[in-house]
Length: 262
Image (cartoon, rainbow, N blue to C red; front, top):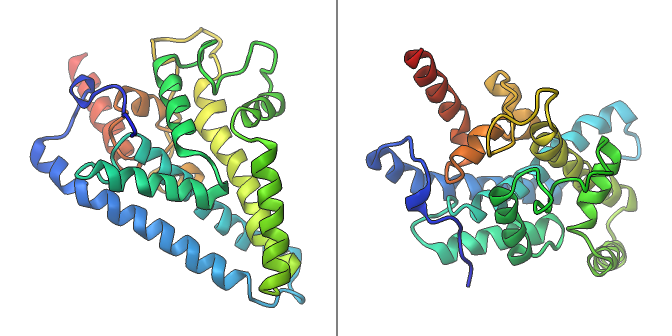
């Protein structure tokens, strides 16, 4: 049903078969952990009393939930590359589909097709994630980007779910807004900024290779907090079948190899 492109035989692999076998199960454990933490966190936050909360008390909670929403999408993204559970493609794609459904009723087959177009034609007219030559600034590019992945049917359905949860389960409107609506929107901004805008904006000197992407090297903890190591974006395009949590290691190994060759 789903096809991963390009075939693994055409992908550069830096890890040995023994190490790779460990990642087979680590990927699904990481995915289940992210989904579980997101679900428990949202479930608790929707029922807490926030009537006495100040804005500065709500802010870290909103950012926390935004981070978890981003984790859902990153998990779905790894599923598109077949690394959530490479041992069983059906389970791998199911987890990806489930994460996108939770994230915002997004279509996994549609995103899978567009994501591989992005990898085959990065930062070009054929790249569905790239601007059209007119929408180059952050806000215009973001809106152009979102228009390619959202439609009125999804938005109307989400609005209906919002009102159904409020009416049938008697969930506080403020809780739904602060911990469900706002984090999902902020997460889309976070993913766009760290996964598309920064790495694929054309440098002053022009693109340096066919990946047309650049890496923003940050301390490991900050790289994780900003967007699950998506700042190591050139490494992701160079080795697309490497999971998000291994990207810093790939960056460091590549840097050492380049230094040794000088």
